[in-house]
Structure formats: structure tokens, C-alpha cells
Image (cartoon, rainbow, N blue to C red; front, side):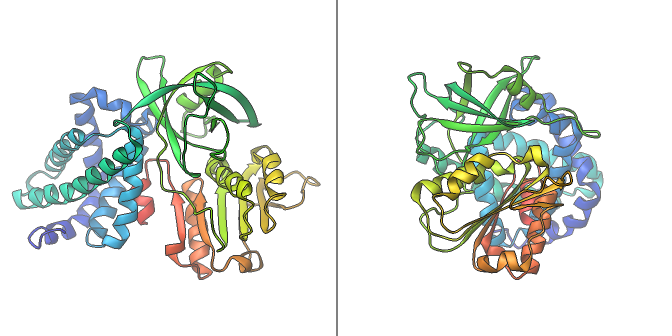
Length: 401
């Protein structure tokens, strides 16, 4: 718990961070990478180049300061971040480095306003969060029985094109076995060597049931859009991975994991490549022959984005209480199929009625999840029954928002 002496300074920091947060985070990352270039491997270079990472950290600092006394709000966020850090192999010593440069950036940007008392308060607040994360990550590493950041080489055993820009890769051990158990909804880190020689890690959901003799990841090639450049890692994977290719893959982590043995309804709402953890969960439920009411609703920009339609149909044959809905923003006239609706995802009261007491899981672009969250809350769904998976740099800010 934050000390009484530090709390007034953290409370007073909220409006200051709203104004100066972006300047602080730009200075922080510039100084951090100049002194510790090896840490660049842990950060998405595209998000760094676009400024998304800096902006997200600035928002996260505000969100943390505003919620620092709300243990109920912070606990699930800390757990989600700990899983992400464990997937990246974050180690305790790196918290010392980050803390030193973050406090230095606050001092440099705020100048005389960064009094010793203010800096001491933020040092305390930082370590309050850092020590909680270090402990949570230690438990995850111990549970996984693996060292921090451990990667192993897996072999691509099959390649499946799901849509124009989405491809699935089945991964096995060298002797053709499953790499091991996981919980549906979890993800793995994949390491890719860039042409520059720099290594980058990306997280991909495991998109099939754990009973298969392989792990499957599904990669959407990120196309250039507006000021956003083409995704370097996704493009390299699409161009380079073939049957027989070898890929460095980490241990499964993540707690976006709905209970499978259930009687309560479950609603899986996704957009774009956010469908990947959902289809893994659905396939696992189908293997169990679950009788629970299940809503599987997916949104795409166009028909080509409706991946896994064949698997969805197969799962339906084993799930007697499955309701499947699809939404397409761009739908050619006359191409509306069963369960496909034009426009963005808007669930009607009639569609939601059978799932009034469901657990809701959301995955997709931030705008999509914000819209669904607001609509569900507005329809009376308790926030405690809504879970969101966030892979981008907005993790803490979005989950607290």
C-alpha cells in the first residue's frame, strides 16, 4: 500500500502527467535505449517508430496514478501484465534499469517541479508495482518449470491459409509431437531475426485445441494503413515460413482462459485476428461436447476476413447450444449468408437475452473492445463478467479504462 506521505504527491501528479506524460515517456525511451540497446529486443520496433508505445506508457502512468489505491482494479491488470512479461522473459534486474531511467525522465522533463518529495513518491509508487510484478512473474516461471525467456526450436508441420492476409502454422517438436500442454486462450512468444540482425518477439494466440498433436498459431499480415507502416515481423513470417521451417517459440502464458467445464453461458466476441484465441477455446469446447449456451460472434471488414468458417461449422455439430453470428463492414449485395450481418458488430437485446448471465470474453482492436464493453455495460452486464485480451502497447491503460 502506498504510504500516506507519498499519496498526495501521486494524486497531484495525475493532471501533470496528462500534460507532460508524452514528453516524459519519449525522454524515458530515448535515454533507456541509448544506454541499454539490448532492451530494444523486448519492444515492438513498429510501435516505437510510430510513437504508439510512448503514448501508451504516458496513458498508463495516468491510469496507474489514478487507480493506485484501487486494489480490486489493479489486481487483474497486474496479473495480465505479469503473463505478458513472463512470455517476454522479463527478469528482476530489468526493473531496476527501467525504474532508474523513468525517474530520471520525470526529473528532466519537470525540472524544478520534480521536487525530492515528488520523486521519492514516484520511486515508492514504481516499486510498489514492480515488486508485485516480480513476485507474480516468479510464480509463473516456477509453474512453467522453465527459465525466464526460454525458447525452443519447433518445426512447421503444416501451413493453412485462413483468409487473404491470415495464415495458420502448425508447430511440432523435431520428432513430430505436440510441444506440450496449454490452456485454451493462452499465447506464445515467437522470436524472429530481422534483416538488421535485431531480434523481435511477438505474441500469438494458440488457435486450436490442446488435444491436437501440434500447437497452432495464426498470423495476420499487418498491411500499411494511413501512417502505420507494414508489419515487419508478420510480413517476414508470411514470406519465410514453410513446411519444414524452424521457429523459436516460448512457453505458453496468458490468463484469458474461459473455464471449459461449465454450465453457465459463455460469449466469445471478436474482431479481425482477435478470433484466434476464440477459435481455440471453441474447438476445445467442441472436443468436450459442451452443452453450455455459447455465443460466438465475430466481426470483419469484409467476407475475406471471416476466418475459420469451416472449423466453426464443424464445432457447431458438437455444440448443441452454439449461436454463431458474423458481421461484415463491407458486404457485397446478395452475398449475405446465414448468420452474417452487414455493418459493425451491434448485438441486439434479443441476441443477448439468452446470455444475460454469461461470461463475456472480448478480443480485437481497441476500438472494437471499447465499443463492445460500453454496449455490454449499457445492457446491464456486470464489468466483473467481461474479460478483454490486449496485445498492443495500450495494455494497462485500456484494462483500467
